[in-house]
Amino acid sequence: MGKRVMWFNGSCVPWEEARVHVWDELALRGANVFEGVTAFWDAAQDRHLVLAGEQHLDRLYGSARIADIPVPESRDVVRAALAEVAALHPGTDVYLRPAFYAAQGRSILSPGSAGGMYIGGFEYAPTTPPVVRAVVSGRRRFGGPIGPQAKSGGSYLDFRVFERERIERDAEHILILNDRGHVAEADGAAILLVRDGQVLVPSADTGVLDSITKRIVLDLARELGFTVTERGVLRDELYEAQVLLAGTLLGVRPVGTTDGVAPPDPRATACARELADAYGRLCGGEHPLSKVYLTPLA
Image (tube, rainbow, N blue to C red; front, top):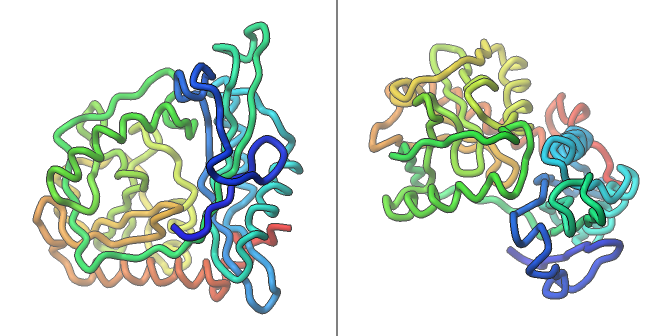
């Protein structure tokens, strides 16, 4: 993971000293909302450029509203804190995780409601394993009242169960179905299917987080001339296409096999690799859409 830095309620502190009480709402109920943000080092400008920074802040504040989490800081303070954490990693790409959390009060309307903010940061250097195997989970994912529109820590508790299954089945990724048996998402990543000149993604009504990385890949797909379709996706369709995963930490990663089944069309695999390559060039500032999505952090 490399050097780890933590901004905690106003300043950077040693990683081990960022602590909350065990009776805080954050510890009791996982009451937090967060974002994963990447900042890429631009050697020519000697500074970091953040990927889709304002989109991530929009979702962070929107998640806090949906999940009833106190908002402790303004956008300007959050931007400055992100820049402060990134600046402690000069010359390297950085993963940043800003989070708002509830400390006291089961609602922001509760007497004495209070919250806080932290930002974890560490060097970002994703790698792809030589073989990428995915399996479809035997469990289903059910939504709650907060729903998939909020990126909340409590919602991610489900992933412990799916992570155990992934390890037991000796796979790199696990693909999750919703309560209706439709394809939802993977372990910390969005699912895209590439086939017949189109990119197919599960629609919002299937109960998936509207991934920002996925949206970037869809823009790249349109720029490359692919047709983009959003609708309910059946499990069997996973075996008829090239599965592509997209997420902030993961980047964009083609899947080699799903439940042991390889993609049937090598042309779809080539297209998926083209999309992954375009995403890499965008993050490196070498794509026409880089100017749209990469902005100075400070």
